[in-house]
Image (cartoon, rainbow, N blue to C red; front, side, top):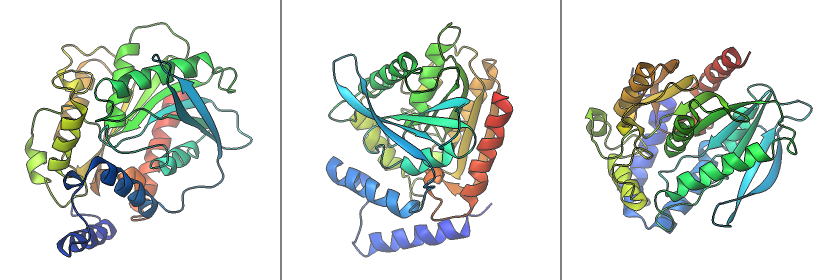
Length: 312
Protein backbone atom coordinates (compact mmCIF):
# COMPACT_ATOMS: atom_id res chain seq x y z
CA UNK A 1 0.00 0.00 0.00
CA UNK A 2 1.18 3.51 -0.75
CA UNK A 3 1.72 6.07 1.99
CA UNK A 4 -1.36 7.42 3.71
CA UNK A 5 -2.20 10.55 1.69
CA UNK A 6 -2.41 12.91 4.65
CA UNK A 7 0.81 11.59 6.12
CA UNK A 8 2.50 11.84 2.72
CA UNK A 9 1.54 15.53 2.52
CA UNK A 10 2.98 16.10 6.00
CA UNK A 11 6.24 14.38 5.06
CA UNK A 12 6.48 16.45 1.88
CA UNK A 13 6.16 19.64 3.93
CA UNK A 14 8.87 18.38 6.27
CA UNK A 15 11.16 17.62 3.34
CA UNK A 16 10.49 21.05 1.85
CA UNK A 17 11.49 22.65 5.16
CA UNK A 18 14.71 20.68 5.14
CA UNK A 19 15.54 21.65 1.55
CA UNK A 20 14.81 25.27 2.38
CA UNK A 21 17.23 25.11 5.29
CA UNK A 22 14.58 25.60 7.96
CA UNK A 23 15.12 22.21 9.58
CA UNK A 24 17.73 19.48 9.88
CA UNK A 25 17.72 15.73 10.47
CA UNK A 26 17.72 14.89 14.16
CA UNK A 27 21.14 13.25 13.93
CA UNK A 28 22.62 16.59 12.78
CA UNK A 29 21.39 18.37 15.91
CA UNK A 30 22.84 18.61 19.37
CA UNK A 31 21.11 16.49 21.99
CA UNK A 32 19.51 19.59 23.51
CA UNK A 33 18.25 20.75 20.12
CA UNK A 34 16.90 17.30 19.29
CA UNK A 35 14.94 17.17 22.52
CA UNK A 36 13.44 20.60 21.91
CA UNK A 37 12.47 19.69 18.34
CA UNK A 38 10.93 16.40 19.46
CA UNK A 39 8.77 18.11 22.08
CA UNK A 40 7.69 20.76 19.57
CA UNK A 41 6.74 18.13 17.00
CA UNK A 42 4.59 16.36 19.60
CA UNK A 43 2.29 19.35 19.83
CA UNK A 44 1.91 19.40 16.05
CA UNK A 45 1.30 15.68 15.58
CA UNK A 46 -1.59 15.44 18.06
CA UNK A 47 -2.68 18.89 19.21
CA UNK A 48 -6.09 17.88 20.59
CA UNK A 49 -5.87 14.71 22.72
CA UNK A 50 -8.83 13.68 24.91
CA UNK A 51 -9.40 16.09 27.78
CA UNK A 52 -11.83 13.89 29.73
CA UNK A 53 -9.04 12.11 31.58
CA UNK A 54 -7.85 12.74 35.12
CA UNK A 55 -4.07 13.01 35.43
CA UNK A 56 -2.22 12.63 38.73
CA UNK A 57 1.35 13.86 39.00
CA UNK A 58 3.45 11.38 41.01
CA UNK A 59 7.06 10.64 41.92
CA UNK A 60 8.78 7.30 42.35
CA UNK A 61 12.06 6.36 43.99
CA UNK A 62 15.02 4.84 42.16
CA UNK A 63 17.67 2.50 43.52
CA UNK A 64 20.25 5.30 43.63
CA UNK A 65 17.97 7.59 45.63
CA UNK A 66 16.82 9.69 42.67
CA UNK A 67 13.19 10.77 42.49
CA UNK A 68 11.62 10.70 39.03
CA UNK A 69 8.22 11.91 37.87
CA UNK A 70 5.37 9.72 36.75
CA UNK A 71 1.75 10.24 35.75
CA UNK A 72 -1.39 8.24 36.37
CA UNK A 73 -4.15 8.63 33.79
CA UNK A 74 -7.71 7.46 34.40
CA UNK A 75 -11.16 8.39 33.21
CA UNK A 76 -13.17 9.91 36.07
CA UNK A 77 -15.77 7.68 37.66
CA UNK A 78 -14.24 4.38 36.49
CA UNK A 79 -12.64 1.69 38.64
CA UNK A 80 -9.62 0.51 36.62
CA UNK A 81 -9.79 -3.16 35.66
CA UNK A 82 -6.27 -3.00 34.25
CA UNK A 83 -3.21 -0.79 34.58
CA UNK A 84 -1.17 -0.08 31.48
CA UNK A 85 2.44 0.53 32.49
CA UNK A 86 3.52 2.74 29.58
CA UNK A 87 7.11 3.62 28.63
CA UNK A 88 7.60 6.38 26.08
CA UNK A 89 9.80 6.14 23.01
CA UNK A 90 12.55 8.44 21.78
CA UNK A 91 15.60 6.27 21.19
CA UNK A 92 16.66 6.56 24.86
CA UNK A 93 17.82 10.12 24.04
CA UNK A 94 14.68 12.22 23.44
CA UNK A 95 11.08 11.94 24.60
CA UNK A 96 9.31 12.65 27.88
CA UNK A 97 6.03 12.36 29.71
CA UNK A 98 4.90 15.47 27.84
CA UNK A 99 5.81 14.15 24.38
CA UNK A 100 3.64 11.06 24.92
CA UNK A 101 0.86 12.62 26.97
CA UNK A 102 -1.47 12.27 23.98
CA UNK A 103 -0.78 8.53 23.70
CA UNK A 104 -1.45 7.91 27.39
CA UNK A 105 -4.71 9.85 27.25
CA UNK A 106 -5.92 7.91 24.22
CA UNK A 107 -5.00 4.56 25.77
CA UNK A 108 -6.82 5.46 28.97
CA UNK A 109 -9.97 6.08 26.92
CA UNK A 110 -9.98 2.59 25.39
CA UNK A 111 -11.71 1.00 28.39
CA UNK A 112 -11.71 0.81 32.15
CA UNK A 113 -7.96 1.27 32.24
CA UNK A 114 -5.50 3.33 34.18
CA UNK A 115 -2.25 4.29 32.47
CA UNK A 116 0.83 4.64 34.64
CA UNK A 117 3.60 6.43 32.74
CA UNK A 118 6.99 6.79 34.44
CA UNK A 119 9.86 8.94 33.24
CA UNK A 120 13.32 7.45 32.88
CA UNK A 121 16.69 9.10 32.57
CA UNK A 122 18.08 9.63 29.10
CA UNK A 123 21.38 9.13 27.32
CA UNK A 124 24.03 10.38 26.81
CA UNK A 125 23.94 11.80 30.34
CA UNK A 126 22.70 8.42 31.60
CA UNK A 127 23.68 5.65 29.15
CA UNK A 128 22.68 1.98 29.29
CA UNK A 129 21.40 0.48 31.55
CA UNK A 130 20.03 3.59 33.29
CA UNK A 131 16.74 3.66 31.36
CA UNK A 132 16.15 -0.01 32.13
CA UNK A 133 17.01 0.37 35.82
CA UNK A 134 14.66 3.33 36.13
CA UNK A 135 11.90 1.34 34.41
CA UNK A 136 12.45 -1.62 36.74
CA UNK A 137 12.34 0.69 39.75
CA UNK A 138 9.16 2.35 38.50
CA UNK A 139 7.46 -1.02 38.13
CA UNK A 140 8.55 -2.05 41.63
CA UNK A 141 7.21 1.26 43.01
CA UNK A 142 3.89 0.77 41.21
CA UNK A 143 3.45 -2.70 42.66
CA UNK A 144 4.31 -1.46 46.14
CA UNK A 145 1.87 1.44 45.91
CA UNK A 146 -0.99 -0.10 43.96
CA UNK A 147 -3.39 -0.04 46.91
CA UNK A 148 -2.72 3.61 47.69
CA UNK A 149 -3.25 4.48 44.03
CA UNK A 150 -6.57 2.62 43.86
CA UNK A 151 -5.16 0.03 41.47
CA UNK A 152 -5.39 -3.02 43.73
CA UNK A 153 -6.68 -6.07 41.90
CA UNK A 154 -6.15 -4.58 38.45
CA UNK A 155 -4.43 -6.54 35.71
CA UNK A 156 -1.02 -5.31 34.54
CA UNK A 157 -0.22 -4.62 30.90
CA UNK A 158 3.39 -3.78 29.98
CA UNK A 159 3.39 -1.31 27.10
CA UNK A 160 5.56 1.11 25.19
CA UNK A 161 6.52 2.46 21.81
CA UNK A 162 9.88 2.27 20.02
CA UNK A 163 12.64 2.22 22.67
CA UNK A 164 9.90 2.20 25.30
CA UNK A 165 8.52 -1.01 23.78
CA UNK A 166 11.97 -2.54 24.13
CA UNK A 167 12.06 -1.62 27.80
CA UNK A 168 8.55 -3.03 28.25
CA UNK A 169 9.34 -6.37 26.67
CA UNK A 170 12.53 -6.69 28.74
CA UNK A 171 10.36 -6.27 31.85
CA UNK A 172 8.06 -8.98 30.49
CA UNK A 173 11.01 -11.32 29.93
CA UNK A 174 12.21 -10.73 33.48
CA UNK A 175 8.72 -11.38 34.88
CA UNK A 176 8.16 -14.65 33.00
CA UNK A 177 7.58 -17.58 35.31
CA UNK A 178 7.68 -15.50 38.49
CA UNK A 179 4.90 -15.35 41.03
CA UNK A 180 4.43 -11.69 41.90
CA UNK A 181 1.88 -9.03 42.68
CA UNK A 182 0.45 -7.54 39.48
CA UNK A 183 2.02 -10.17 37.22
CA UNK A 184 1.86 -9.07 33.56
CA UNK A 185 -1.26 -10.22 31.73
CA UNK A 186 -0.35 -8.72 28.36
CA UNK A 187 2.22 -6.74 26.37
CA UNK A 188 1.56 -3.86 23.98
CA UNK A 189 4.64 -3.40 21.79
CA UNK A 190 4.45 -0.58 19.26
CA UNK A 191 7.25 -0.55 16.65
CA UNK A 192 9.91 -1.88 19.07
CA UNK A 193 13.66 -1.66 18.69
CA UNK A 194 14.54 -5.36 18.63
CA UNK A 195 18.20 -5.41 17.58
CA UNK A 196 20.27 -2.26 17.51
CA UNK A 197 23.46 -3.59 15.98
CA UNK A 198 22.17 -5.25 12.79
CA UNK A 199 20.92 -3.66 9.60
CA UNK A 200 18.08 -5.29 7.69
CA UNK A 201 16.47 -4.55 4.35
CA UNK A 202 13.94 -2.13 5.83
CA UNK A 203 16.78 0.01 7.18
CA UNK A 204 17.86 0.61 3.58
CA UNK A 205 14.36 0.69 2.06
CA UNK A 206 13.11 3.37 4.46
CA UNK A 207 16.42 4.98 5.37
CA UNK A 208 15.26 8.55 4.65
CA UNK A 209 12.06 10.44 4.11
CA UNK A 210 9.78 8.43 6.44
CA UNK A 211 10.06 10.42 9.67
CA UNK A 212 12.48 8.11 11.53
CA UNK A 213 15.74 7.78 9.63
CA UNK A 214 18.31 4.99 9.82
CA UNK A 215 21.11 7.48 10.53
CA UNK A 216 19.11 8.79 13.47
CA UNK A 217 18.85 5.26 14.83
CA UNK A 218 22.64 5.00 14.71
CA UNK A 219 22.86 8.34 16.53
CA UNK A 220 20.55 7.07 19.27
CA UNK A 221 22.48 3.82 19.72
CA UNK A 222 25.83 5.64 19.87
CA UNK A 223 24.51 7.69 22.77
CA UNK A 224 22.89 4.78 24.61
CA UNK A 225 26.02 2.58 24.42
CA UNK A 226 24.29 -0.76 24.99
CA UNK A 227 26.51 -2.80 22.67
CA UNK A 228 25.25 -6.35 22.14
CA UNK A 229 23.37 -6.62 25.42
CA UNK A 230 20.06 -8.43 24.85
CA UNK A 231 18.36 -6.02 27.26
CA UNK A 232 18.62 -3.40 24.52
CA UNK A 233 18.30 -5.89 21.64
CA UNK A 234 15.86 -8.61 22.73
CA UNK A 235 16.36 -10.51 19.48
CA UNK A 236 19.76 -11.41 20.92
CA UNK A 237 18.23 -13.15 23.95
CA UNK A 238 19.54 -16.74 23.80
CA UNK A 239 16.22 -18.38 24.71
CA UNK A 240 13.11 -16.29 25.18
CA UNK A 241 10.70 -17.69 27.78
CA UNK A 242 6.99 -17.95 27.16
CA UNK A 243 5.52 -14.66 28.30
CA UNK A 244 2.25 -12.81 28.64
CA UNK A 245 0.39 -12.47 25.34
CA UNK A 246 1.94 -9.83 23.09
CA UNK A 247 0.38 -7.39 20.63
CA UNK A 248 3.09 -6.31 18.20
CA UNK A 249 2.03 -3.28 16.17
CA UNK A 250 4.36 -2.22 13.35
CA UNK A 251 4.41 0.40 10.59
CA UNK A 252 4.84 -0.47 6.92
CA UNK A 253 7.15 2.48 6.23
CA UNK A 254 9.57 2.11 9.12
CA UNK A 255 13.28 1.24 9.23
CA UNK A 256 12.41 -0.94 12.22
CA UNK A 257 9.83 -3.01 10.32
CA UNK A 258 11.98 -6.07 9.60
CA UNK A 259 13.42 -6.43 13.09
CA UNK A 260 9.90 -6.03 14.48
CA UNK A 261 8.74 -8.87 12.24
CA UNK A 262 11.67 -11.00 13.38
CA UNK A 263 10.91 -10.29 17.02
CA UNK A 264 7.24 -11.17 16.58
CA UNK A 265 8.39 -14.47 15.09
CA UNK A 266 10.74 -15.11 18.00
CA UNK A 267 7.98 -14.35 20.49
CA UNK A 268 5.69 -16.83 18.77
CA UNK A 269 8.43 -19.47 18.67
CA UNK A 270 8.91 -19.04 22.45
CA UNK A 271 5.32 -20.05 23.11
CA UNK A 272 4.17 -16.47 23.74
CA UNK A 273 0.71 -15.91 22.24
CA UNK A 274 1.47 -13.21 19.68
CA UNK A 275 -0.78 -10.97 17.60
CA UNK A 276 0.99 -9.12 14.79
CA UNK A 277 -0.58 -6.11 13.11
CA UNK A 278 1.14 -3.99 10.46
CA UNK A 279 -0.27 -0.54 9.81
CA UNK A 280 -0.32 -0.21 6.03
CA UNK A 281 0.58 3.23 4.73
CA UNK A 282 1.91 4.53 8.06
CA UNK A 283 5.35 5.33 9.43
CA UNK A 284 7.11 5.00 12.75
CA UNK A 285 5.49 7.01 15.57
CA UNK A 286 1.95 6.58 14.24
CA UNK A 287 0.51 6.52 17.78
CA UNK A 288 1.24 10.25 18.06
CA UNK A 289 -0.28 11.22 14.69
CA UNK A 290 -3.96 11.72 15.44
CA UNK A 291 -3.64 15.32 14.26
CA UNK A 292 -2.13 14.24 10.93
CA UNK A 293 -4.15 11.23 9.76
CA UNK A 294 -7.50 9.73 10.60
CA UNK A 295 -5.97 6.26 10.27
CA UNK A 296 -4.88 6.40 13.91
CA UNK A 297 -8.49 6.06 15.02
CA UNK A 298 -8.60 2.45 13.82
CA UNK A 299 -5.10 1.86 15.23
CA UNK A 300 -6.37 2.64 18.72
CA UNK A 301 -9.63 0.83 18.04
CA UNK A 302 -7.79 -2.38 17.21
CA UNK A 303 -5.68 -2.06 20.36
CA UNK A 304 -8.82 -1.62 22.44
CA UNK A 305 -10.48 -4.70 20.95
CA UNK A 306 -7.39 -6.82 21.59
CA UNK A 307 -7.07 -5.61 25.18
CA UNK A 308 -10.73 -6.33 25.84
CA UNK A 309 -10.30 -9.89 24.53
CA UNK A 310 -7.22 -10.48 26.67
CA UNK A 311 -8.53 -9.01 29.90
CA UNK A 312 -12.06 -10.46 30.04
